[in-house]
Image (tube, rainbow, N blue to C red; front, side):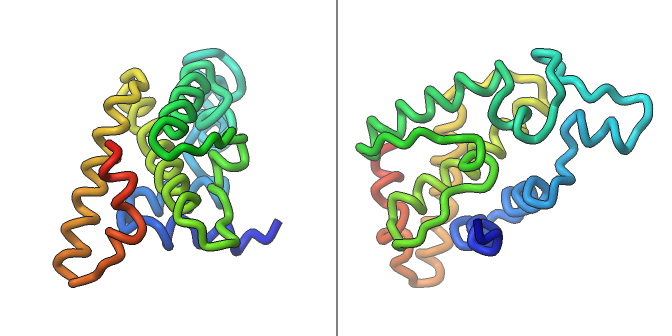
Amino acid sequence: MDWSDYYVIPYSIARATMVQSLQYKIFHRFFPCNYTLSIWYDDHSPSCMHCNMVDYPEHYFYYCQEVSPFWTTLRIWWKSILEVDINIQVQDALFGIVNYNDDSVIDVLNLCILYAKWYIYKCKRDGTSLFLPNYIKLLKDTLDVEQAACALAGSDTFEKKWANLYNSI
């Protein structure tokens, strides 16, 4: 594993600093999941509030019983709109997929993974359930902003990278 390949993923596919910052925290293992909070604060439990397992970042974003079905649903959705069947593993969910061949589908998947983590974080923080249509709305809103930014810059990047996803949702 060349960590530098993983490190650049959020900065090459997303403009929003909120998702870049989230990925930075995950990458450097100081994301405030319950396990990390229990190290920082003596009175904090390391257990997940949903399933009572130790809440490491891997658990928080992938293995938790509240999150795992979301990744399965997301995989089915990707297969229906992108016509690709990618079984996201924990490493992919946490760090993304290195795009060695400059494949636009991998960029789209990385964008979806990055915003899936943001959505998971937001739902857990707010105490709401993970619901695929709400995630898709978040993704659509993100792509609306990206489309506007590309139009203002006179760039055709949106059409090259994101139009297929945008037109599918």
